[in-house]
Image (cartoon, rainbow, N blue to C red; front, side):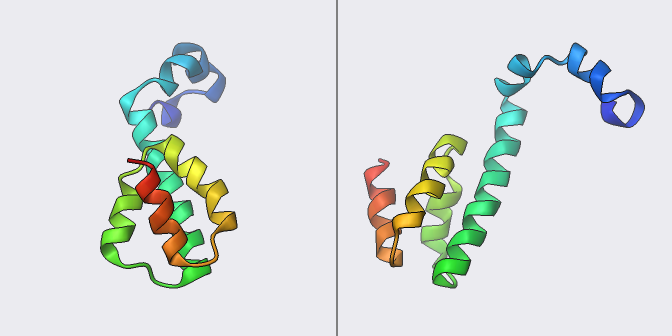
Length: 89
């Protein structure tokens, strides 16, 4: 809401980036955006992914989703995703 009323530089002064990155809300936003990107990449590469497998991806942290983004470049089939997910536990 602050962005609707104040200049971006002022908001940055008030809400330092290092503090914001540690906030639960910020992490939630980053995780959701990362999931959207990874799910689009998976769909493009393999078509529709079954719901239970996609839910496992959805439950990954933002950091794990970043790692998956790199790893999926080496995947040749959906089974590679399952193996990778099993290694995350």
